[in-house]
Image (tube, rainbow, N blue to C red):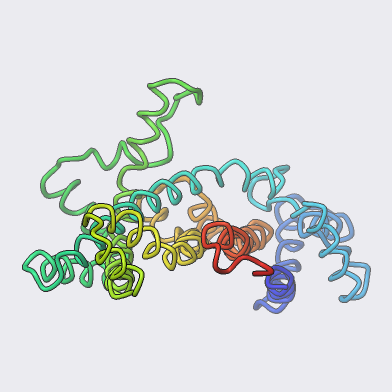
Amino acid sequence: MTIWAVATMTFFLVRLMPGNPIEQYIGQLIAQYGLPYAEARDMAASLFSVDLDQPLMVQYFGYLGKIARGDLGMSIKSQGAKVSDIIVAFLPWTIFCVGFSLLISFILGIALGALMAYWRDSVLDYALTMIGSLLHSIPNYLIAMILIIFLGVRWELLPIVKMRGSMSPGMQPGFTIAFVMDVLFHAVLPIITYVVTTVGTWMLTMKASTTATLEEDYVNFARAKGLTDGRIRTAYVGRNAVLPLFTQFTLSIGFVFGGSVLIESIFVYRGIGQILVTAVSGRDYPVMQGCFLITTASVVFANLLADLLYGYIDPRVRVGQ
């Protein structure tokens, strides 16, 4: 339903934009290549995945049918390139960067959050709580700019110019150490940005969840049985405290995925966010529509994944029980 709603909005928004992008592109083809109006109109219809000779609602249902078949149209700026091919080429870079950084921040946040709860009301707890609250409130683009200004410009610790893009020019993709190190070299700043701006949320959420779990009756019963603190923290507290964070983690994948536009633009990282910015600036409407759909699908898929897997992780909410 959500994907259908976004597909519907993008279809009609393109036609409601000032100047009508389809008619503008037809005029552009006529002016640049001297094409007859009918030929330019056919090319525009192919690029936008619509049949302009049909009524609007017929075009709409035809557009939905093409989306269902994976046909997102052709790029306006990259002549002859399918939108689906462009997205497939750049999507893995965003998946790697976002997925790797979220995994690091999730593990780090859980460890620090549990430590804050176990050492509640201590100096360590107050310090980490303040740090977590601060990181939670800072926008990701501000962290990105701070990293560039201090690490790249003022202190000159990192060669910012060489780190642009997703890999070095001339580097051949493959399962080699050189390629892996080159990919990590270009992704290190976006990964640090994602980790810094998300770890505070995991710290504070894990602290609250662990603090509540420590007051549960089964934890007090385990203490009464004489179990060691280490056994209680791992087998009773940790496993149950992390369950509420699992749903939040899967949902954050989709939202951070959608929020990659600013980060990838700042670091010129060639992922789906950077492609969307390029499409917007170049008025490449078919690519814009494809990026919107992919971003929405990532959020929907993350929600579905959370619903399907949560029952296996927490037996208390399994279907039928």
